[in-house]
Image 1: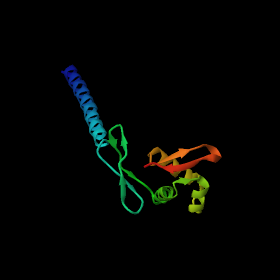
Image 2 (image 1 turned 90 degrees about the horizontal axis):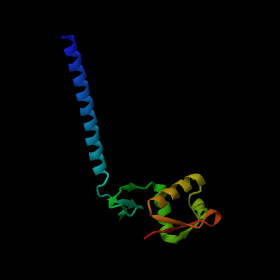
Image 3 (image 1 turned 180 degrees about the horizontal axis):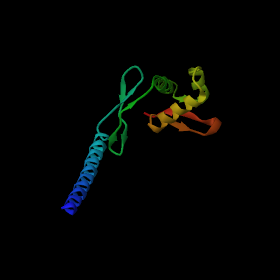
Image 4 (image 1 turned 60 degrees about the vertical axis):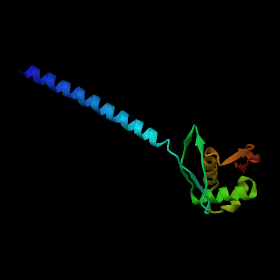
Length: 125
């Protein structure tokens, strides 16, 4: 009788382990599908929207106020150097500006051209 209880506990433990694995797999699939939904980028204070397509996925991006200012300036000036951005945002460190620029480049909103001291940024239409 004691042997039967051990087998029963072992079977139920195995069943619940398998059930937990399947629940996790289903949750992963559902979350993966949600990430492929249509979204938009909101740019600047004028509520202009731009779609970003990456492998038939649309990603919703919210820009910080600082990133909106930078993006607006690049649209207006067409070509902006890092020193111009430092003058535009004097209370922001150059490292923070560089992080913002890297994010905007990764989002394919702007393009970085040149390298080191000859680096400048242009707006991607």
